[in-house]
Image (cartoon, rainbow, N blue to C red; front, side, top):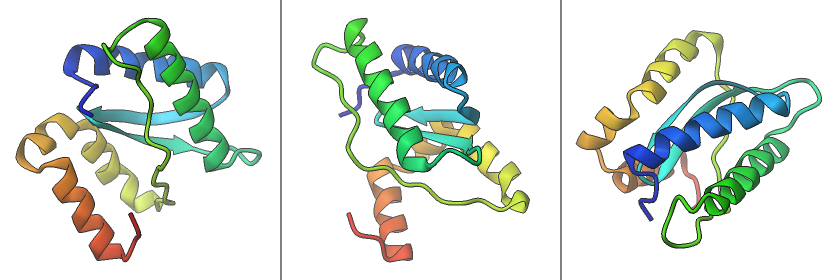
Length: 124
């Protein structure tokens, strides 16, 4: 569901950053569109992606619902996608994350997701 309209998304992103900082989670970049977010996160030596995602998604869902930012109960999908990124790819990824709104005005999220799934042989 496209819950993350512009006015909600900005507040959610700010909250996720602030909350992550309090849990020693370093979010380099975060942005998204109506139905998803992308984040460039630097994991510490004692952190793993599953734990980080549980903390970010669980707490932000709670916060969104507590503050009644959506009419219906909000919850993130169970799945997430995480990959390692080489240093030579970081600037392009930052630009991609920063430009999510403009990007998804041209390319629908589901079409892009289907392309990634097919291109990399992933399962839905």
